[in-house]
Every structure is written in C-alpha cells, then in structure tokens.
Amino acid sequence: MTKQFPSYKSQSPIILSIDTSCDETAAAVTRGVVVLSNVIWSQAAAHAQFGGVMPSLAQRMHRERIDFVIDRAISKSQIPITKLSAVAVTAGPGLAIALEVGIAKAKELAGKYQLPLIPVNHIEGHVLSPLARPNITHNPSLNLRGEIKEDDIGLPNLGLVVSGGHTELILINKIGDYKILAKTLDDALGEALDKAARMLGLGYPGGAILEKMAKLGNPKIYPLPLPMARSEVKNSFSFSGLKTAFYRLTQRINRDSSISSGLSSRQIYDLSSAFQNRAFQHLERVIKNVIQNTPLPLFNQRGGSERVFLVGGGVAANMELRKRLRKIGKELGLKILFPYSTKLTGDNAAMIGIAAGLRYNPHNSLFATKYELVDRKPRWSVEEI
Ligand code: KG4
Ligand code: ZN
Image 1: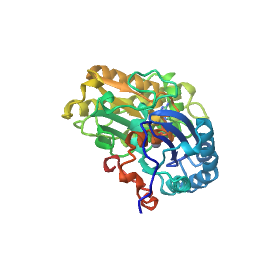
Image 2: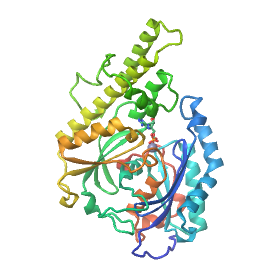
Image 3: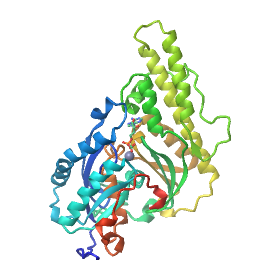
Image 4: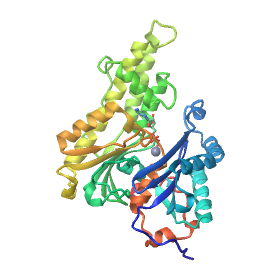
C-alpha cells in the first residue's frame, strides 16, 4: 500500500536523521544542506577497554540513548516535529545489531507522524558531508532554503572517504550515482592509525592523539617502508604491511630501550610521525596515480575551472592530511572541500540528513514504499545505491 504524504512545497525538505551504525548514537535535523542540529553521543570511552567496538555493547548503549539524542536534536533545531518532511536513517554499512536500533526507531517515528522513511548509505553521507552548511550561511551558491544545485558543485566530481572502516576514492557522477575508483585491500586508514596508536600505548581510538604526537616528532628518524612502493601503483590502498613493519620496529625499540617503562616521549613522537607520514604518503601516491590515469567524465563548468573534490570521514579531521590533500589539489587542479566542522567528519547524523535531502523527491515512489522494505544492510556498497 502506498502511503499519502503531504504535497511538496518549494521549500527544501526538513529531515530528522538517525545514525547508529557504529559507536556513536547520533540524530540531527537538517533543512536541505543546512544543519539545524547535530547531536552525537559517543560511546568511545565504553569501548576503549576492549580496544575496539563491541557490537553487543554498542547495541545496548544505542537503545539506552537514542530517545534522548533524538529529543535533543529536535529541541535544538527549534523545529516542531509536525514540520518534518521525512525521517532518514543509516541502513548500512555498519554493525548489523547497531544499525537495527536506529532503523527500528526511524520506522516508529515515521509511522507515528506519517512521514516518508529514507534509508541512507553511511558512505554516501560521509562523502557528501563537505556540502553541509551551518545555519548561518553566506555562500552565494546556496539559497536561503538550503538548496545546492548539482550545477553548482560541478558534477561529476570526486570524493574521498577516510574513516575507521573505509578508505575509498569515489567518482560522484551525480547525487546517488557513485563509482569506487580505489579502495583498501585490507585495513582502512583510520583503522591503521588506531592500531599504530595502540602499539604506542596511546589508547583507543588513537588517530587524533597520534596526530598530536606526530606533530612533535621527526618522520625521518625511524625507517618504515612505503606501502606497495616496489609494485606498480594500482587502484588500491594497503596499510597492513606498514602496520606489521611498525609492530616489528616498536618491538625492537622497546627491547633495546634503557627505560624500564618502554618508550620515551621523544621516541613516541618520532614513531607517530614516521607512521603517519608513511600512511599519508601512500594515500597521496595512490590518489594522484588514479586521478591522473583514469579518464574522468567532463565536469560542469559552473563548478569553476577546477574539479571539486569532497573529502569526508573521521580522518578528514587531521590537519596534516588536509595540508597534503590541498597540495595535491593545487597540482591536479582540484578544489578540495572538507566538512566545516569536526562534528561532521566523525560519525554523525547530519551527513545522513544532507544525503537524504539532496535526493529527496516527494514524487518518487521510492520514498513512499512500505517501511518494512527498509532493512539493515551491513555491507552495503556506495556503488549499489
Ligand atoms: O568516520 P568515523 O568517525 O567512523 C567510521 O565510520 O569509521 O572515523 C573514525 C576514525 C578513527 O579511526 C579515528 O581514529 C579517526 O577517524 N580520526 C582521526 C582523527 N580524528 C579521528 N585520524 C587521524 N587524525 C585525526 N585528527
Ligand atoms: Zn563513518
């Protein structure tokens, strides 16, 4: 049975979005690409004792926190719930039993308020997150209703997602039509940084703290191999060889150390710097190679003379990485865009609302299908949207 929804007005859709794909319980309200509220309750501290995310604990904590997080998102947005155009929820990829919590809640709310339910791919959310705008905006390509026209972002363009679970270079043909140009053969970049941080005793997740330590160190003190340096650069990233080399290196330094407590601060700074440097060098090398050697479709000139390159995901918060990607941008004529806040780089629901809003079409029957058809897709690829 097709549900009847309120007719579409010229206004951008106001969407309540939910993400429970991993260890952040998140809800947001967006109007088009404008973020009206973005509430994130991280469970990281609870999972830290296990050195990684425990799915059953994540599920329990999502269940305990989700109502509170949604209520906060709605009250902070100052939008009455009756004004919502739709509910959006992350359907995948992610932890199956964690995704389940958000999906069940989204169905409950969509049913209660008779709203369309939009399932969103988490990676699509990350890659489109640089298009999000704060509530007060002076961006001329954005009208006050929160619309971004495809012409204005120069599609087809490029995207990069660097998170704890994914490392993907993506061709964005148009919103909803993606092709993966390169992905990782093993660990994701964030996962590799977290593992290196753990070897140095920096806690979990350690990407951000590794960045701080690396800033104080010299990347040239300790030798580490550049991943896949001897092989011809292909359309793949790989971080597991670097991780193994780093493990051996830290073990050796620990063994030889004169300090009983293990590594000295100086050694931690230099080791962090060496690992981060090699991991980023590899990322840069593959990105450059793929972009230079892949015939890319022409992009719309209204996007400017440079092709737009959207960068999202937890590791996109890293300032050193941003600097290096901007340099690549200069060399290859790319206009690099990052999310405007670190509340949009790590897992959040605003990016899910933005992705849903950019594809929202009240006349599309996709949004009016039975809620039962919306189900968790733990391994959902961004190419299969
Ligand atoms: O996007 P995200 O919150 O979750 C996933 O979808 O995986 O990304 C989390 C990842 C973690 O690996 C975390 O260590 C990393 O992002 N991260 C960083 C920084 N902040 C978060 N890595 C490097 N530098 C940072 N400043
Ligand atoms: Zn994520």
